[in-house]
Image (cartoon, rainbow, N blue to C red; front, side, top):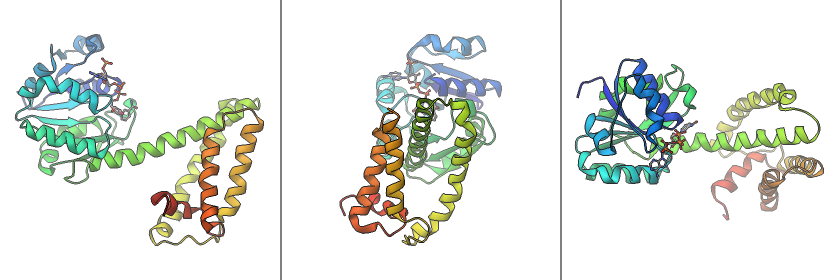
Length: 291
Ligand code: NDP
């Protein structure tokens, strides 16, 4: 197939955005999706709709895969294994590192090579210059297909040969994302229970979120050197603070699962004898629970 031609399997919000930006940049795009109607707009713009996953895989050397999880990848590609020989699978599907490694071994067993990708932006960030994707797997494959990767997100970073590593980096970021967003949902629920709207709370939420990067910078060196001196933030102080947060939520009739989980972590730190240390000592407990 021509050099500027790719296949996209999976047209959820993410795969659809990828197919669109590839069409925008003049690529010949072959698509396949379980629910074929999701391809309608792309076909109207010149994409080719494959009739089966195997047909989609045969169409191009480079096959972008954007499905919900690796169970979906298995379901879609198992009937297409005969078509995989010589293919480059850019698998941008969320997975655990172990799943990504197993996927790469499975691809190799069928004569294909997998480059694992972890996309760090929502669909609106696809095609944007500042958007970042981590890739891991063979460097040579990353280099050879750099042009396509650069279309998907302006920043493509190769993060080593281990096909699980991009998945690990992705899970690090996405874990923080979900937890932080739930912290925000909790605050919005509490604000609403007290007559404030999300809009009323927005400026303060932004200030709080923006302050976090300074805390990361402050703690990173100390954590790496095992320094948890309670000079600015004793865990016992934090324990009292998170209990106030929990009780404020309870008093307002808001769900307490999240603030209660936070109190539980702080309590375990105090019970482990770290009350006079920095609350960063919790990292040690979280890294080795039960130690
Ligand atoms: P969705 O889950 O919305 O859709 C992905 C696709 O998976 C759909 O095309 C769906 O087909 C298909 N699919 C799911 N199960 C099966 C199955 N058993 N057999 C065949 N096809 C299946 O995901 P997104 O498009 O939002 O995201 C794709 C990947 O990118 C995910 O792994 C996600 O974690 C990751 N990601 C998403 C981000 C986002 O903001 N959306 C951000 C960063 C990463 P059908 O249309 O038929 O349902």
